[in-house]
Image 1 (cartoon, rainbow, N blue to C red):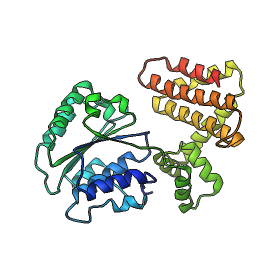
Image 2 (image 1 turned 180 degrees about the vertical axis):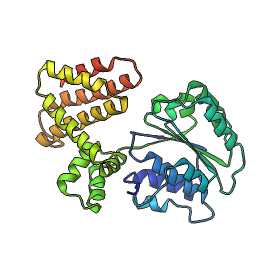
Image 3 (image 1 turned 180 degrees about the horizontal axis):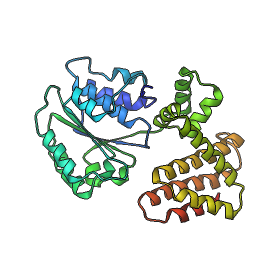
Image 4 (image 1 turned 60 degrees about the vertical axis):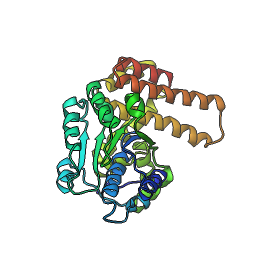
Length: 317
């Protein structure tokens, strides 16, 4: 199935204006939740600025907001375009100073065939402090033929000195309407559409995974249903469930916590809608959702025991 860009119209229009006016920054920070299309936009933006002068300087496919297939294989991208350099952070691994120095060495060369050399660092928060400080030197002395795009889930995880030298672009999850329109083109029923949007937490990348992987879809469905039962369960059951989830890898825990957030939000909206309802209940649910987000950060940074965090969240639900 194709990897498609869904939403982000304002960002796309902004990037297009920069291309048309020849106001392209030497460095960008693409910030936003995982799996919402940041890398797809970065890749297509790279193509557009590299082709400037050869073709119409416009992210034409992005203006439509959809229908652009982009290769994800590093080998495939680099064979097709040696002026596009990509550094990916593997799950749980840091981006070492050695990898950044190798990137800097490539960036020091004049573009092979394009207008710009473009470097995309996906998961830039995984850079070691040494790697980040090394990259800072390149950002402090930008080349007129180089554009660097850092992709992060949160700008707070990047050195302030790096952030200050980048143009920050914040990505939000696409709207439910945008996702519904996309899934209607896939001829999904209203029920399937709602499940896909809920189970993906409105993340297009996750929707693609769910469409391609029935086993993953069923797992998300089980997690959603399990949490709905846990809400009304006793402390003993909640503590057992917390222990079960705490034994999983962080990626799995993160997915479960995101589903809890969606369930709580949907439960309130289904009862009261956007504007009405019990003010105290709304404040309570909003507070729990904030605690879930805080708990995710603590677990990720290993600043708290995962089991204890999960137990506290479940008991307070």
